[in-house]
Length: 369
Ligand code: NAD
Image 1 (tube, rainbow, N blue to C red):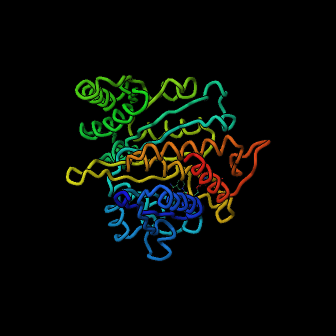
Image 2: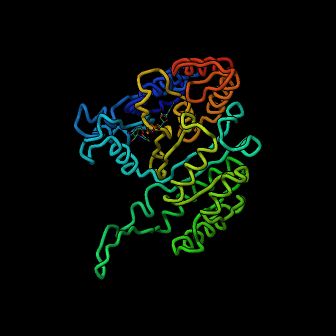
Image 3: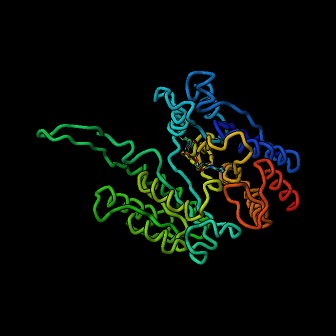
């Protein structure tokens, strides 16, 4: 039996508990059949936490998140909590987790599965085999920079934000991108607007220096953010890892995600800095989609985005590449056999429920043993 791997599971609201239920079953299967040694604790976040505790995440849950090896989150939010005070809204729980765990690197893979190639709005020849990893800086930049606000100058109203990055903030996120590239196809594209922004010139300088000093074996390119948006749609296959700031990353990761055509298939990871004493990297894994209140409780939700987030957790938090490959392959096989939840359904395929999809993935995991 391997050393215990402590996971804090926060299913959240809407379809969150349904899709997380499938991951819980996969974890149980991995413990029983592979002796993986996961120890799972469940807790509340978002609206479900507000209903019990009057806040979107409690201090006790935050302490558990800090202590865990990884956090798995479903989704938060829903119309039931639309009128709750802003600081207690479901999203506040998510933001607190990201902020207090200092999860500065957001990893958003855009992977096109052969069986779902027609789900993309782009031509199959443009997206076939697509496998991009976008690394977005998540805790600094223009969304947090000071000063920000509104002002009246010379009788005219202004609104303003500040785009600001320190050298360590750029270096730590670029390091994540270079390390990922070393395990992938060895290419990093750094994206900014050095042509019109001082912070862009600075970003480029810092990434270039880090590359020269520590990662000369990785191929580094630079691209302006507007050109990157165009290239993602024109020829996405040219990219391996893209690293960019908070604002451009917000936009470009959504653009790249949609190349794959389906919200129910998109996983993500958010990572912090390695603790020098324990060696632990704070990490939270979650699907990109929200709580989908329109289909909650109906067994219609696609659990694959959450299952693929679990696969990212195996890979990045627990160094379980073989098990992650097995899970990814199981998902590929299930799709190749034509099983589909309603959101990715197409002619000639077989419609399955949330748990039907989870069962099929576990069956494929067995078969791949
Ligand atoms: P959403 O992602 O919840 O849903 C958008 C559409 O995609 C809906 O039609 C939904 O049915 C569908 N969908 C989403 N995930 C699916 C899945 N796994 N399987 C099948 N279909 C799926 O976005 P929204 O409707 O804009 O937001 C709903 C709630 O979720 C809001 O309260 C919003 O604030 C919240 N939200 C939370 C997160 C998060 O927790 N990270 C992210 C986005 C939105």
